[in-house]
Image (tube, rainbow, N blue to C red; front, side):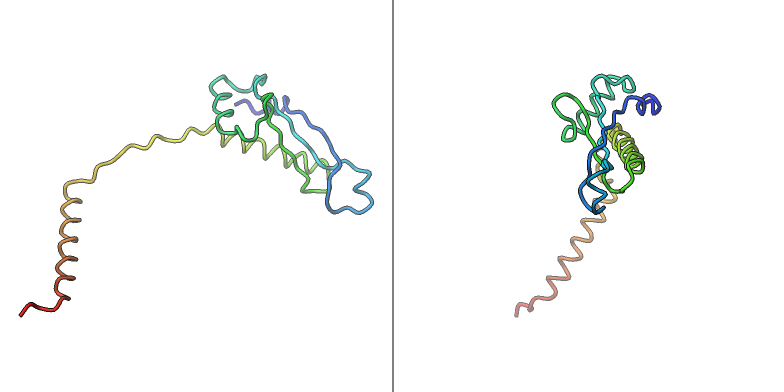
Length: 133
């Protein structure tokens, strides 16, 4: 993933935000919406695009566009910074390939220890019973 290439491909739209701000909120577009067309992006290889589609399928629309919004701050510039960071971390996490879990068998010694503990617990419980007369 080429970070500079990716940032140049991002598209932004400023929208009026809900929430605190009083009368000023009706005049200023401080909410920022980020759009990234993953299918036409040159920052990712085909393998990376497939991984992103698989891992972020719930965030990508039918046209293959990743949409993110931010209205945490009253400043449009701050919201833009936040949404860019959020996008980069989201894509970085989507590109992580998890390690394949290898099944491990317990060793012979571990099996013997488990059986010995099992026998010891059984004897302990058997000794709690009333003796047969």
